[in-house]
Length: 197
Image 1: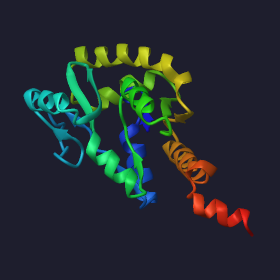
Image 2 (image 1 turned 120 degrees about the vertical axis):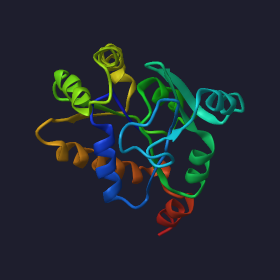
Image 3 (image 1 turned 135 degrees about the vertical axis):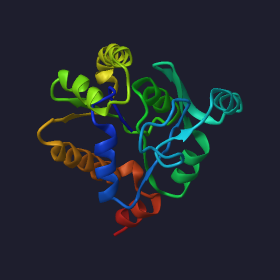
Image 4 (image 1 turned 90 degrees about the horizontal axis):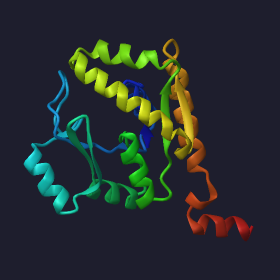
């Protein structure tokens, strides 16, 4: 899971990572916020009205859910379970509390905290989107200050340098590759085969 404050560059970096790995499946989150310009339903998010979101939440349809900046966000449970059973690596971009909640349910999940090289870059990136009011940006910045205090709860820290985002993509790719070779992720029959050679 790639998490971190709003404006850290999660969308851009995860897209670049997905382009490098065919075994990565992106988990599309559900949200009650309105689509931003260019966003599409079932590609960027599942855009739900609040009543439908609550109906699904009540039916245990989300692995985790949170209210963030006045909107509801959730990770659909069925997609994650089916993808993991099929042997895919699933990448998600939940907000920080959501990532920690998922880790409780899936202890094997890998949490990557994405941070900017300078905190001031967050505001600039949010302003560059031109999708939110100054008040909404200020609220996101307050949330970002709190989220930064959770860095030690994550497995990895990746810094997204403003001038060199490709380095952060390389770092994400290195983590994905390394995690694939952890002994506990290999099939038992492969380990047994090695032991008996």
